[in-house]
Image (cartoon, rainbow, N blue to C red; front, side):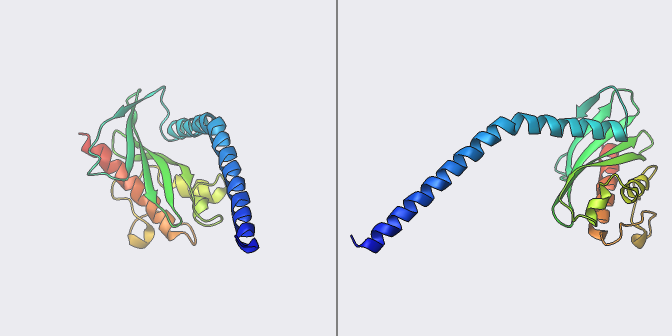
Length: 184
């Protein structure tokens, strides 16, 4: 073998070892943190449920998943105050996972965005704890199935520079109300 081939093989082997060690370390870190990440996501979801429709506990219900593909779960509040619907919709930069509370009159009691990958300062404002985010989410309280952005004749004002995100959240709330209505 020539010196060049030996050098390439040696460098390839070193690169392989570095990649294998790095992959092993990442695998170990993933295993060590998997439980903690799950617990934090679960706590955030429980907190979101309580924010949109307070109840002592929630009972998950079955629904027609083929008719409502963006709905992840529907839960009935133990105090019969209504339902909490978790949806995952497409935003401008990726998925938005959120919950919406729906009362017995099929009106939204509130929304909480659990996870998103929207642009900071634009679509991410929908989930922010700042004034813009709080005001945006407050618009949904008391809205019914005919909810729409003001551009489409509704009463929901879109976030500035984030029409796609605003539309996705609005459609998720409309879908949440529709799935609860379908339960009978």
